[in-house]
Length: 100
Image (spheres, rainbow, N blue to C red):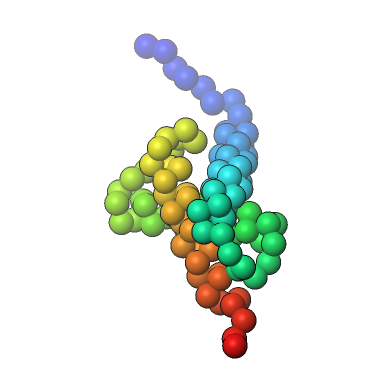
């Protein structure tokens, strides 16, 4: 029987957080490419919304579909992150659109 010791538990949490940031930045860029347009803000805002959307997509996927978001390279992780980023980008566009 082999005992596996985790000597750096904080490092794993930091890497998970950094992984979510990277995933969100990429998902935000992909969402912007899928839905181009004039949503208030520039690329920086879009990328930050991508991070929020990735977290939201992960939460929705876990709550509704029971799909865990455990691996960075999982197709379900990416689809949920991009879907969440699209949702947040659409909502942001509706909130910031100029009234005619």
